[in-house]
Length: 512
Image: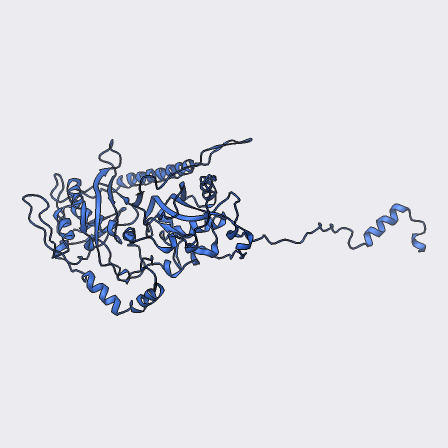
């Protein structure tokens, strides 16, 4: 103690602070034990059935339908995750638990401007069922891509999944509703809550390539798939090198009820035996009537479609437009039933030959294809949108998807303008190839000996060929009946047995 005898009070305090190892350490904040968020008890809430109308750019997705091991995210998977994140549906219940139904299934690269899904969602009004009637189940954190069931097994053909599919099995309209669309015990609903609040919630968490446009409450027995009366598709293309009049002639032959087995991809695992579909409208039109030389669109509207049907038709229209095929080839491809041969399409034209199986040809590219609209009975839907509301200090909180979509459109136009100027820069050094399509058109010179043709496939894609073989002279695939039989007796036997066992005691109307 002798050394500190003459120290002042301040010196002693400084010395103690120097020797205290904990002096400079900040005091830890008062910590409360972290509480795990209480799982949301979906069973305690009332539910309501709604329909969502939305758009998506298919180039960013591996298709509409959920897949087990997707290379790219699927539209259904991303939308399902958004619905789970906003606590509108329970992940544990999966697609069957919410009665999920889609209007159309689009493949990789195919877009939609008016896709529709229907499902049951949790109501936000606070109405609850008695607590004794429900049980709590923790929410499982797992990717939506893994939420599948036997009823929602992704479809594959014998060739496996690929880029050639478009609106896969849109003939689903011909079947009665599935059990998933009609819950055994429909939950109580209420009509006071505004369903448009779902639009902003979902768009807030969805990527900009998927936008919810409108929402509607629907009846308990409504199905986006089975209640649909018609679907309208658009396929955009450049008219350069194409005879639009000939394409219009060929397209007009599609209207009515026809057998489309030669204009679709037959998937034996589906065991489809009826290929007759009704087309309500088919036409070739300018996108902007004020600029008839600009982009054109193939408009096709029908009540039901087959796998790849739209792109098969468009591939034939391109061949007709080049002059390599006559419009009458469309009538021949539709004349597939020897028991009911088609008559001549118009007076003075010979009766088309019977074509019982599809000739081999490459179908059109998926990029320009879009599901434009889906039609339902009057009164089945009441599409509503969320309007801007005042926000203190921020003026109006504009929740419309239009500003963001306008920005994406402007950037796409800028990209197209840049590509146009890159082409102009190249033409300062290189000569643009002379057109050789459509064959026989004024000012069009025939391709010289040894030349290679670039057959249009849409979306800027072509197939190079030194010679052309007419469609009706090409090698043909097996008839649909033989393809189905080979699958039943071969690799598909076990799968068909499992499907039959799963559907035992129930109507065979489930979507695979």
